[in-house]
Image (cartoon, rainbow, N blue to C red):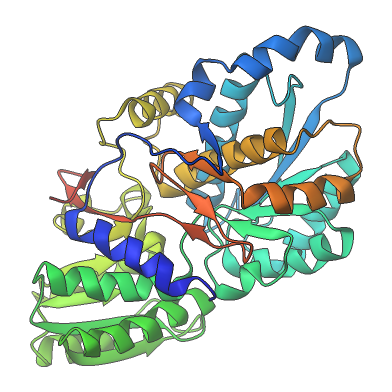
Length: 410
């Protein structure tokens, strides 16, 4: 990616400290969008609410993700995070004084269904897309948003190709960045002397992280003793992969995979009497929600993530409080990414002075420029900016599972 070195510099500095969200820098050349201030009301929005209401019109934002099926924990989190953000924005004056409507569609982690969901939202009148949630679906939909010149920001589509088109931005880190930062974090904190890896060679997300991790692990002097793959057709029995890691003496198992497979690995490793330290990336998020999973098996597991629900800054605490009150769930990184995506839309739309009567294409053209001019203080970074490539500049953190909860790593 064009700004990979820049992103990785910022990522490494943060990973060394695993700092929590606090404070916000300023930039003379950027429009700063402080979501904490937005939640309390903005001068511009409040001043124009009456005239906007009289003129009529609303901004329409759509979200797409798996609301049912194996990956529903991701898609529902994206929907819920967006809903919290829209509730706040509407309560405090809207975007440029106009209220916001939100509509979510289920894609069941299926590419064609994601495209169908996009067309449904387009027929509804969508002007901005917060989605898709997963990488392959996001890439599939991006071909259509490019054709329509529709502004798209994926909260969690991490494959490099998700932002190959100039109308697409993302909130999360790209897969290679996650793999590189994970190796750096493990080495810097001396978390393991021998590393075993289990990854999904059939999945673009898992394979991308794996490849970047192996390259960086060598640079960091980490000893990788096993590199074992599985595929979508063989993702229930991990006995062979685990045995090779155990025989190799791996004291840390790096799992750049999704939480459903991670839960099975934890269970099967426990039956073998194998208890390494587990380290994953954002796909790991959701492990505590697996039905009938003994969360004590995940005790001490770590994942690299830009969001920790236990962070003590006001923005995070207010978000967690609102989320838990509305959904009776603790928000994960996907909810936080989506929340920030909505506020990025708000910040760029206000920077560009958008109104709902503009065409989708005109909105997109102005958003592409405005996104490179804003600085967002959000849940996943105290200071987030975007490149014209669609890549974010922000810092990650690591969290550890303690007593069935995600806790900021120290």
